[in-house]
Length: 372
Ligand code: G6P
Image 1 (cartoon, rainbow, N blue to C red):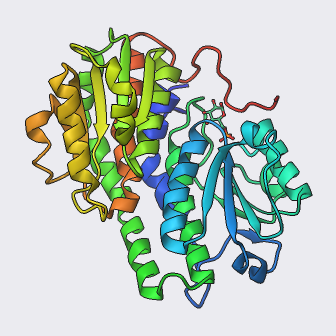
Image 2: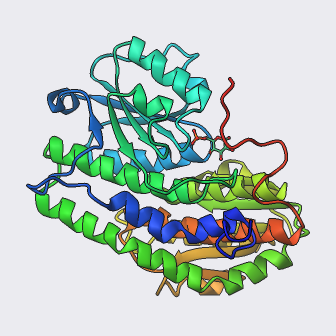
């Protein structure tokens, strides 16, 4: 009913607007009386987590892109090697696992069969398991050694939005928790990141409040037959998610690429009028990736691409090379996916709506895939 949708035309639109609360609620109540970060359910000794030598993140679909963000954050903050693998691929490749391996599963529903089976398999091989999950008491968290619940609230639309932002938030929290446990970050550093995270909900709200131009662009692109997305570092999973949303909702052929890979193949796809979204790293990125991605924009533009750029507020350099720029508020580079994802969600939702599609129930898809 209209009331359930909170006045929005679809659950998806409502859930996109629920995101400031989803992030804020996921951040709530994360520390004990001494100010230490805690997990929701810890059924193993923290010493076992201190001895972790390798982390494997397992997930499917949108959740796997949250897993990619987890990799960047955990490796940077904890200096523990992290692999990310699709659950269904992981199980059938005789992965190398032992008691010093930590499996981090990410699942909105907690019931995805591929992920559940992968977690069970890893447990049998002796791994420790942490579940990032949005559904209290579902199977995957119940069977895991520790849990970090996302508090996005029930997600109705098949395509994940608020659960994704909550998963990314939880991934950062897990990274900080492990960094605290292994003393890889100073207390002050952890506090600074937490304080920047606390500012995210208001920044997401700002994006939502200024979404008219992205919606207008979406409506004007309803006839597009292919859209490409480029991103780098933490912007890479954002590009993948932007492309997935467009496939899922608007049935448009869309691909996400790591921007550095462009010259190794995808650039051949570019011809006159090809729309290309580019998620631009912060100019403050420690690896100076900003300049490299700006030159990617120039490269595709020189070949006729219509470039649509998502960049950080104040980044004026991108203006000259972009058909259209959408700015997101500033935050530290690692946290940018919580902001840059939002315009891409709005774009896909609006475009699919303009085409007359049911964004809550895309064809051929199920919210929770409980078969292999
Ligand atoms: C289905 C949904 C996707 C979701 C994926 C993983 O394919 O359509 O939106 O990302 O499952 O679901 P999970 O519940 O494990 O996060």
